[in-house]
Length: 225
Image (cartoon, rainbow, N blue to C red; front, side, top):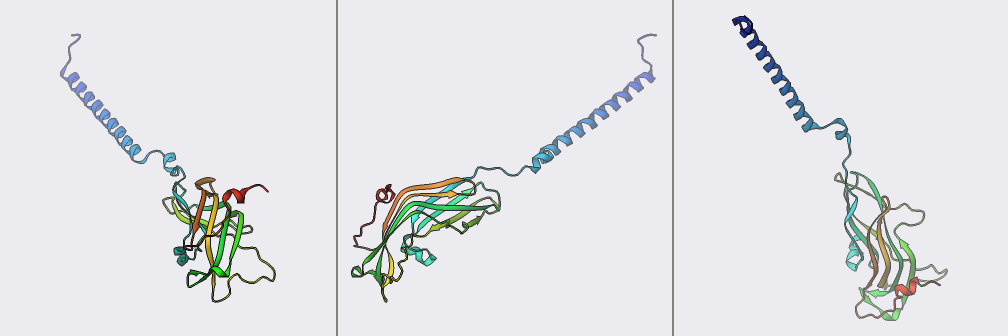
C-alpha cells in the first residue's frame, strides 16, 4: 500500500542517515583542522613580510664635553651628540652628522691643571663645523638584531689656523688647553634616513675657574659680512 514502509526500507534509510552523518562529521573535522592551521601559520605571503616599525630617536642629546671626558680621548670643549635610535632594520648600517653653524674656542696655558694667565690666550672661530670631514667618510654605526643603535658622535673644536714660522702658544712645561667654548645652532642627524634627532641653539662652557675671557657671541659669528 502507498505510504507504508517495509522493514527493509527502514533499515536502508537508517544506513543512509548514518552515512550522511559520518560524511558531515568528516567535513566538519577537515574544516576545523584547516581553520586551526590557518590561524597558527597564516598565509605564505604574511610569513614573507619583513618586520615593520617607525624609525625614531627615542633619546638624543647635544652637549659640550667636559674635562672628565678626556679619559675617553674626547677633548674638553668638543661637541658630543649622543643618541638611541630605534625602528631600524636589524643590522642596518647608519651614519650620523653632529653639526654646528659656528663655534668659538679660547685656549690658554696650564701648569698642573692650573691656568697661567700671563702666558696669553688664543681665540679660534670656525663656521659650519661637523664630524663629517671633507674627503673622509662619516662614521658608520651597526644596528643590533632589534633594530636599535646606541651611540655618540664627536665633533672636534675648530683648529687654530697654521701660521708659517709661528711657534706654540704654550712653552714647556706649560700645556695648552681649552678655557671656554661656545657652539651655535647645532643638530644631530641620521644622514642615512634623513631624520633629525636633536637641535640646540647655543651651548657655552667655561673650563677654568675664576677666569674671564671674551668669547664671540653666536650673533657675532653668524653675522653676514
